[in-house]
Image (tube, rainbow, N blue to C red; front, side):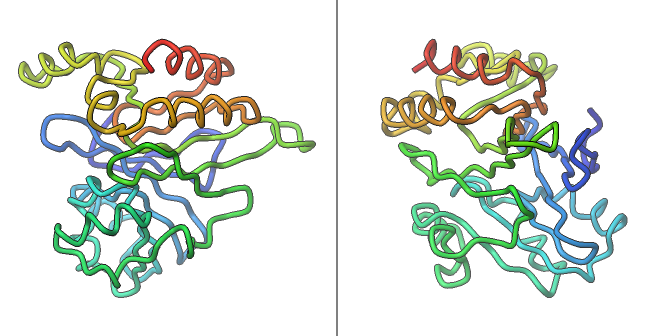
Length: 241
């Protein structure tokens, strides 16, 4: 997929997806359209700012979600480019973002206040994550009847690199850490990102009992869509955690 540009997500007309590189690894930004003049943007990368302004201008209202305390590098560039921006993060992430140049009062806690996401969207709080990860979920029906599938926009819990990196150092790290190729929970996630693996495992497996994710948009790697995705995630969690 071409990086540093915005792509539509098939079958989801309100969703856009873009990739940027930090430092040698593909990271993802996701935008959810509320209206022609209002968007929610999750983990905005600085290199995706210019293509965004070219496509949408900067005369819009933005709700920026920092999905954990690590995904903040591009945010200040977006704040400088737009006049009307509201920031959101989890309570745990906000306490850590204070040490990274953000005022605690400048970010709204998602536990109390959430952006005006479209109908069918909600914010999830996966437990046991060191940096206060949040997920955004879209639930919908493919038949117009009861909800029967969902899209998960996750943070660092899962990786989905389609191949190993061409960069020698990045390739070595991915191999050592079990971070690629395909859907993974890497060693970094297992031993550093997660502070309580069993709590997260129980929460995620319980969520899968009532949810049927058919599209996964992780913070790192490619969008993954298929009818067997829930089973793939279930197997991965059981195997790795």
